[in-house]
Image 1 (tube, rainbow, N blue to C red):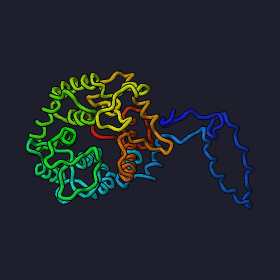
Image 2 (cartoon, one colour):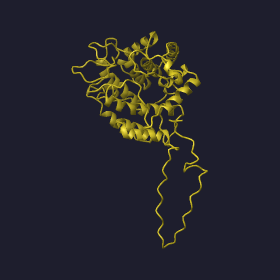
Image 3 (cartoon, rainbow, N blue to C red):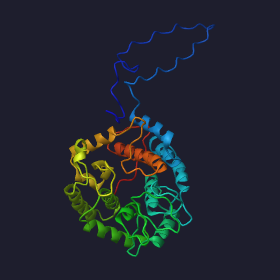
Length: 358
């Protein structure tokens, strides 16, 4: 099916064992120069490129340097230093990250969503430590709300373009959506900093008292729970959260019937999340929320979502051409890493992804 890395060979494929052997060229004599090798036969439409090859072409055609180097690191044996160098161009003097690292927030200013994105990249490289993280935590200390958490968007002296679903408030509250992924990754990498104490308490309180939520907030809760050291407490919280997700129909359990599942308030038409969006790796606590059949259907759907140009679609609301263009390679990388984590994608060179939760 579309999106699978390997496809059955067509009877008409030049690689098919049933194809007739090409005629042998006559041996040349010492006085006869050898014939030039024949160009490879064109690949017929019935024998498409594997999913990874199509995705690679899409990445080189459309992605930012950062996503190009991330793809090379994860799938082509590329150098982690080159990813780190590309990420460094988004680093600000205050220790935070800006410059539209998350494509939904434009402009140079450091923002929590950029920080979460940067930490995911560093985590995948095994480099979430050292003075850079110390400076980042000092920055987070200075910009946190009174309850020690992070807002989704900081107010700024100048207005820079931002997605309409990330409104700017003069006194924004701390939110699990922004705080959970940052706290989870820092704990996952055994970072110690005073900022983490209050931020961790904030996340625990929000996760354990959630009564109504929306899919992206649940994703952030999972990111927190997958990284937190107290695994017994995390497992108990995840169990309750999983029941809430199913009861409130926040996840599409059958992609064929996805139109029957409600869209969260403010989400774009068709913007729904699936089991693989919550359990991106088999080790995630969210994997226990779904049966094997539900997960299989979800992964089948994810594989089938690969588009003719090799990339994966973005389901959130399009609001600016540049943001939409930059978002698709990120979604493509996430899809490939998820498929590989579940054994749905193989590559000649396949470096390990992020360290599984403890």
